[in-house]
Length: 119
Image 1 (tube, rainbow, N blue to C red):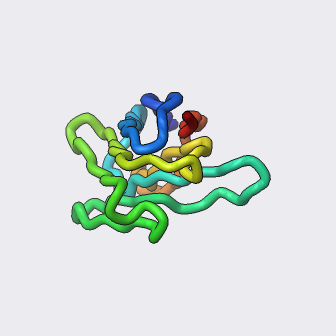
Image 2 (cartoon, rainbow, N blue to C red; image 1 turned 60 degrees about the vertical axis):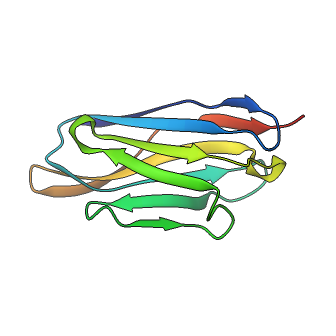
């Protein structure tokens, strides 16, 4: 089994910054993909950012230029640096990872961390 544990959420004023972390632990041979999604009340979960084993990255249009995703491979950890935060960024942020282990490829999700942008 694999666990994803997020941290770093909280309350921040508009224009401020936060850094989210997500550490994967357990039986992991390789992490193909790590990423972040978010969900606001009454809305569907939406893609935010992803980083692949090639270190290529992808962002949603709404965060491009403000958020940066990175990973620390030895620590199986992914980070999301969020700058110039807006009230619309308020949501529960979920980490996800595609894990290769024992010949299987499985997607896992973290429990989520709340980000609130408000004055």
